[in-house]
Length: 263
Length: 318
Image (cartoon, rainbow over all chains, first blue to last red; front, side, top):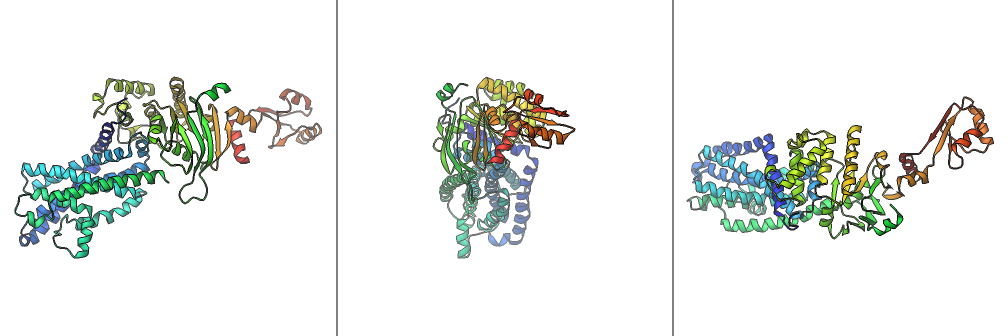
């Protein structure tokens, strides 16, 4: 037996399980690649062609950074919510009866889904290169690091959503309401520098906003467009995401475990 | 096992006044049950659908919290030492709980690492020698050396069940919970599974806590406990449960049924017509009884009750 307290091995094993599943699920790999193509290629390209000249920065690049953050955030969030599916397939029982801390289980799952999200992020970056988004080696590295943080944050958000849902059916019904409004409120492919007061409040309540803005802050750092595109300092966004991460993970895990046991 | 050792050995499972009422339910799913299971015992929990068997097992394996009452497993309190309880039990759920996307070996490896028996390594070939040997040994026992590295979704139902048992025993649990382990298996798979479990019990002295719908499987139990509507309605060895509820009886019949009926009444031999004449054997031996009957008989059959007879009777009574 190895140390009673070592949780790292089990966390890594849980993370590897999710990554292995992705590699064996070709259909899922393909569908996750189509979405960024549609948004960056079609929407970003169309907006650039029509309004690009008027706003003084590239719509294509704005959409690229937005979709990259959104893809990573949403992928891990949805991955966490797949714990519901596991529960219905009764596989999660096997994990939840192991003598492992509930936080380690959830954290292992977040890590695994982050590993699942990152190849998708890389695909978005590759696609960005193909359509002509300016990307040097430094920016690619910055985007990967920032993207990893965004993916972890999305995972914690997923835990919170998961803890309030009872079934996969409920999850499927609620998805559009949780993610679609955030696309617009977080400014994934639309500028949100100026918003009416009620949308400004809603936007500040959308966790995805901080993820998108953080990633843009890293990408645009030192560029002339920074002030036109980025809403606030990346460090401020990082602090907000850190606080929310701890809150979502703690509260979400407690609620999830309680709803599992107190039926 | 003698009475003296039964008292001396501390029970592996102690359940006292366990009660569970699900949210919004009007009645208790499990209603104040108490029992003890001795080390190494095969304990069978029986009951119709909805009797509270799965609820009981879920509580004992810490996936569901009790409304009231207490329980300990291997000396660990369920409410305060859930993690220690989880470390000392293995569970085979009603529905298969293997990850279908992983290979058999990957499922076993995940389990071994979650229970911290072996350190994490990303590949089988990098795992410690002890682990690799154990996996090969288990695969040989199951006769799946070739399939060990294939996805579980290609396995038959019986093979999956066996793999789950192998997996659940990796951390050498003190108690193995089996929640209807053979439901959905064909007769050959059921038998193979039980042969495997018997050898495991003989080698590892694992305490087995079983729920099942197949009463013939419970015949081998050291003790059976029958639940109905959340309450215990019988608890003893299978023999005693059978004897207490249904004795041996003899079935007879004759061409001249009217004559036989008259004769039995005349000799004050108690009988019930089912439609054959059923006579309990607790008062008479079979031989003196048959000798005393003069009507020529066309049917003679003695019947020893099965656990199923006793089970159905106890349910009807409760």
